[in-house]
Amino acid sequence: MIILPAVGGADREGCMSQSHVRHGVGAVRPYIYGDLATARFLVDALGAVELERLSSGRGFHIEAQVGDGVVVLESSDVWTPEQPRSSIYVYVPDVDTAYAKALALGATSLQAPVDKPYRERACGVNDPFGNTWYLSTYRG
Image (tube, rainbow, N blue to C red):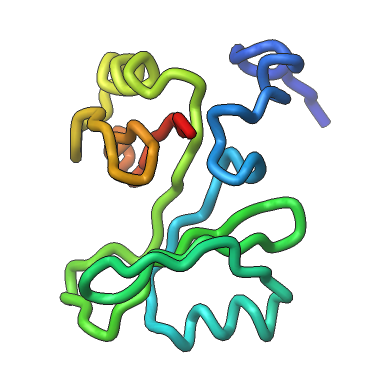
């Protein structure tokens, strides 16, 4: 077995600071899509605790804690066939810097950083392989 050294990034102390993370936990969050039965599945099957449920017009934006992580669910009964089924939501200390670095590394922009009504500054990118990443800094 070959063990390679870890690749770059912030020092351990910088990773532990959570002031830029909504609810203070779960800096990296699976972002899934489904209906309200999916929300019930999170709670009943996985023991999730709902942290927040906000109306999104077509359904609900739900954040649920599972263990020491958080899952974000966009729920609706009306989805188009091209709707993504999952993506990754990552809290970073400076969303504008992370966005610029992602683009420099070949990502394509889905949305430039913008201030959101829920006290976050957020953006979206697709990495060169096609994975969808939403990057955000909580400013609560």
